Each structure stands twice: as C-alpha cells, then as structure tokens.
Image (tube, rainbow, N blue to C red; front, side, top):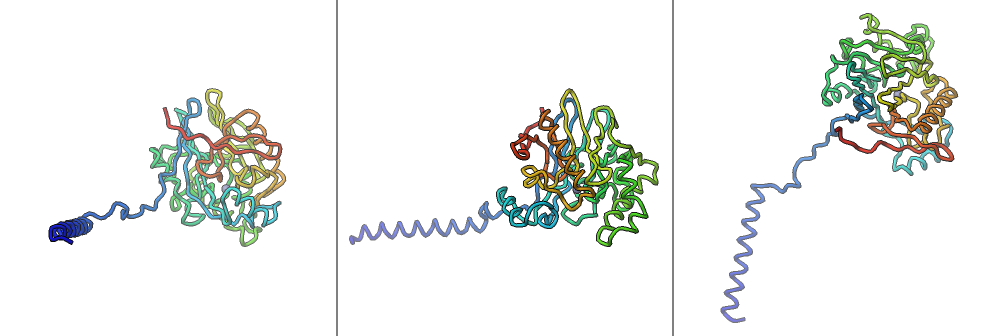
Length: 328
Ligand SMILES: [Zn+2]
C-alpha cells in the first residue's frame, strides 16, 4: 500500500469515527422517535350520525369479557369455538356495552345507560364518553331503558344519586314489576340476587324523586320515538324505534348478544334470557322486518358502535356494519 493511499484510508477511517461519535452524541440528546411511550388508551367512545333530522350518538360504556361458551344455548362448545374462530374471536369474548343518545332537536333522549359500577372496572365509561361527545348529563331530558339488567341501568346513578339530574326515566311496567319486586329478590337464587339489587339501587333514586314514569307495551313516547315491546330476554324487554324524515333506526336492546354467532344462527339463545323462546321469536321478527325494510339497527352488545343493517341469507342473517361517515 502506498503512503498516500494509507493516508487517505486513515482519513476515511477518522471521518467515519467522527460521524459515529457525533451520531452517538446526537442519539443521547434526541432519542429515536420510536422510543415514544405507548399511549395505551382507546379513542373517545362515541360515534355520531344523522338519521333524517335527528342526531344519533352511539356511546360506549366499555367492554366486558363474557364466557360465551357457558352462556349460549343450542351449540356444542367445540362448534362454538370454531364459529368464533371464523371471525377471529375466542372465549372469553370481549363484548361491547353500548347506549344511544338521540337529539331530536327539541329533546335529548338517552336509550340505556351502561353498567355504572355494577359490572366491574372495564365498564362504566358512558358519562365520560357522553361528555367527550360534547353533551352534559344534566342536558338529558328523558332516559328510555330497554330492560333492567345491570349493564343497562347501572349508569343511571352516580353514588346513590341520579347521574342525570334532570331526566325523566321510562321503562316498561312489566320490567319494573319484575326487577323491583322485594318478593322476587327474596325468592331469587343467591347468584341472581345481584340483578334485582342492581335494578333497585339504580332505579329507586328516580322513583323517590317522582321521575320514574313506566309505560305499558308498544307506543309512541316522544315525537319520532316509539317503544316496541320485544319481551323474552326479560318480561318487559323493549326495543325503541327512532324515525325521522322517512329513515328508521331500531335500537334492539338485547335481542342479540353475540353477533359472530347469532346472526348466522339466530336460534342460538343466551342464559340471561328470562324466556328464551319468546326472546328468539322477537329476534326473528324484528330482524326479518329490518331486513325487509332496510332499517338501521343498533345493538347494545354488538361491537361498538353496534350500528348497521341486517340482510336475509338462505339461513340466518348477514350483518353489515355502517360505513364510516363524517357529519355534513
Ligand atoms: Zn345486556
């Protein structure tokens, strides 16, 4: 090697070394962007869309892991696992709990309230998401409850006070008679007593304030919003039909729990049903009607926001979630 070439090589080596040292120095001052800490929180849980002149806001209360292999009736555990796997899901199934806020332009009406403190730490975010969506609990005029299970009424209260201080509370009389009954609580098996106690604790502050106004069966509750009696899941289970400018949304409540299973095989029922046969009949009737008319439906336990269409298949139904849309 000539002296000149050696000198050049040395220069190159020194240059590389300088760059490396400088680089190391810079790295110490300015960490790589990939070292940003993980945020690990979900986006605010609301999804908004227009239904004619009405503004609908789907609100997430959170999710709960359900042992659906123990809860669903009518399918062998191995087949259930296979069916879930086709949708890339497994047991326990992370299940959404959704509620729906309707602004009619003259009234703000909340359908269901999530679980509050009754169903563990992964639920109870309804009010936080309602606030994130731009509303306040004291603006809610009326609350319509699909049924008095804890994951639908728990959010009615904050501590032992109404979480919605100005709202009238409405639910079917049959659910009130069943879930608020001291005799039914006394007779209930130990592992079901919590359902009754949760309903009483959640609803009674509204009863005490003279703001619980039960209704009986189907009928209009407010211009554009009607109760639709769909009993079976509970004695007074109610779906709500919201209509504006010829568009219709059916808020199903708990007519369906596990979309990945029950759309394809709607005859599968769930252990929470008071009367599984009626629950099944109501599910088929409402789904058939929604499929025929092309109505939107919204499910309390369909993956958030839980809004979409159902289409008839030779067997069962297809679920078509709404296309993401901005408001304009
Ligand atoms: Zn439910």
